[in-house]
Length: 521
Ligand code: NAP
Image (cartoon, rainbow, N blue to C red; front, top):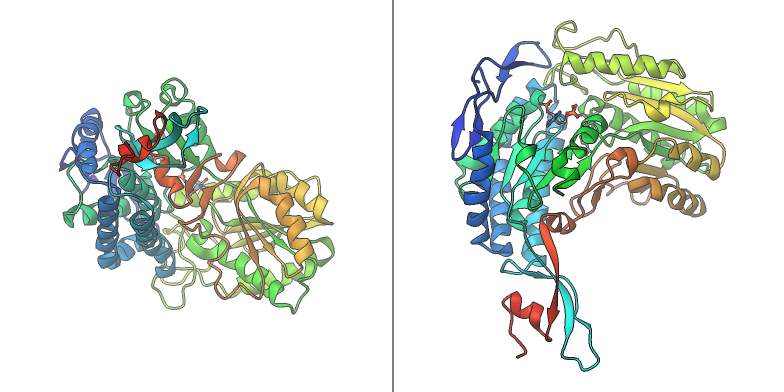
């Protein structure tokens, strides 16, 4: 890999000056690449997107662009092995990289299918039926949606360099907006390779996809009301970007997917020995260990009926005891490394905050046995299970340790459960694991205003369930409050984010005529 990671701007691969900020291999600590955008013409990239990429995409219609999305997803699928191999350097096991890589092209495929079936051939989408606006029936109104003329900038988190990019790219392409991708520095080399694969496939019109492999100083200054920003990352960065004048003064459409302290709830019916008990314990361990817990949707708070905390603690600890930490691909390894030692050290600091109000049930934050790697050079961490017995504890509801860390909490009835869940200030994903329909109804209705998505898991749906942590492209991904207040995915809703809704008023059949359909006149 080159010393400084290239960016793809205005039709060519370009490299920033200087060695750039170092990015290290999560497993060996070796230098992977450097990150720099110094000296690159970022304003030229924005211009190129608007003047070349957008018009090129909008020469096609929605359904033709759906074919592009399908072809792009196919190109990534064909070369997925290259992405798995690179992701291993970021600490990902094969199962982890499948979540990112297969999840990425799978999501794009779903969008392509939705676009082919649900969107028209031109660039005008008629949204609704006509509403009569006069008594005589000669004057009506309805809404049409047309592609914005700007650029879709996506700013992504480190944990899903492929999925995070494709789940934003697919709807923007469908809508007819050119995209500039700004990946997170720690895994930008994985995103860079995915972009290279898509560009080498020669499918996309020039300017439809550009990549900035590093900081984007000044780029927000260039954005305005025809542009969109899709941000995924921490609540702190979301707050900073949301308060930029591009958003506050010039109305850039800004969508944030931030962090959250997601809850999973064990129902009172799910006693030891029931399928639901095992499903709850299994899901918690899965969410703690997939991607070493570096998932925005991972279960951080596991709520259990107060009197059953002991048996649940024992069952989860027993399963965590089977986790083998080590180098991706090494014999028997079931959990890889965190993305880097800085991230590991940050998780350790957050665990210390949690430990001020919670007891350690499983794991050792300072030490872990590692297979196939040097524990001192790689960013390894043991899974950490905590248990908070003091009901007034605040840290479990506020501190996100972005690693293999979860806290067990007791609850006493649904009102207490909902009050405690609400202390997380809004989440992306929640689970209710129970076969008791009354409990499920009460808990889900109570938790719904606090969540973007809720999974109800029981013995009947478990076989087909996609799991707590997996956003589905057909359904909304996002959440209120701390989770960022945004919505991504959700089928064609995500495409509409890049379209302008315009109320058109005139004679009957006007909207249909604008869309190229037969006029009634
Ligand atoms: P982060 O530090 O907030 O960074 C996110 C992105 O913002 C990175 O690309 C980062 O670039 C960029 N960035 C930082 N400051 C910026 C600025 N001033 N202007 C423009 N871009 C800027 O988050 P992270 O550490 O990558 O990701 C972990 C967090 O993301 C966790 O809290 C997790 O919960 C959350 N997350 C949420 C979701 C979701 O869907 N809701 C998904 C994944 C992760 P650099 O890397 O170059 O600094």
